[in-house]
Image 1 (cartoon, rainbow, N blue to C red):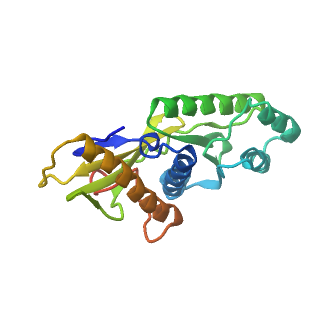
Image 2: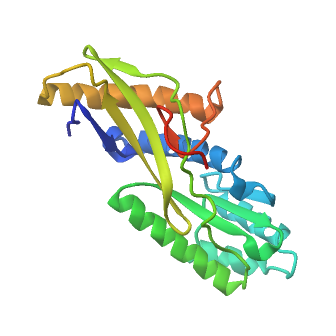
Image 3: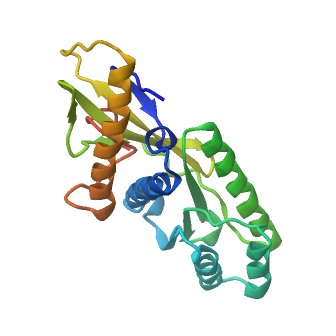
Length: 237
């Protein structure tokens, strides 16, 4: 695969073909989005927030959190665990417990691709099944709909051209947050669009973003302020 040397929006699947590497990058992006959610007005009145650890401990930690934050009933944790073992339920990326509990909500984060949308909707369907089976007062989230922006740590230079980078994310439907990675060549520069340039850009963009996303996930002097990480523009949330 080659990329347009002038600019485009892509997903991790296009930048990191190795599955293990791609999953690591997706987890870094999710951590950045979760970090922004935790500073948003949607989380302001939460008495507790669950975030998916992204590993095999997710179901057990989700069960424990739900049992501790469902004040109006006792949850049959063994039954819930059996449902997870049977792949009937899913662990969303974010769950909030707010007062009143009826306003509590959850979100799933996925790349803006056909697979991402399908997997995201599938996880929402399976978590909704859990909500129904255990009569929980939880709903797919709608209050978190990021529209602000903040600078990416830096631009990158490839083959004599300078590129500005953005990580964009938004609420696609209730409970589903989608994201994409966008790059744009500086307008004052011109570059011949060739297959060779596109292949080089694909490789180097993936490396540069891996470094930058690692900085963001670790909080190394960069905290995103909104749903667009890149050159600042747009109204504040």
